[in-house]
Image (cartoon, rainbow, N blue to C red; front, top):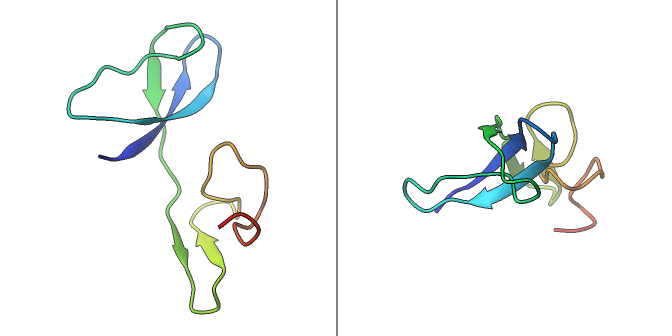
Length: 72
């Protein structure tokens, strides 16, 4: 049961959704069509901090921190 990231075509809302099988996904705010986004991959290093692929931001789409150390 993967969690995917989406962006609404109309209102540009970014959100995550747990998807079961072939569930249709629409924007939770306006109900319009959405596009699936490429998700960043993260892992916990031997030092105990989280590393993310991509731009150095956290793996959580709703978080503005640059490290997951404070919340994970």
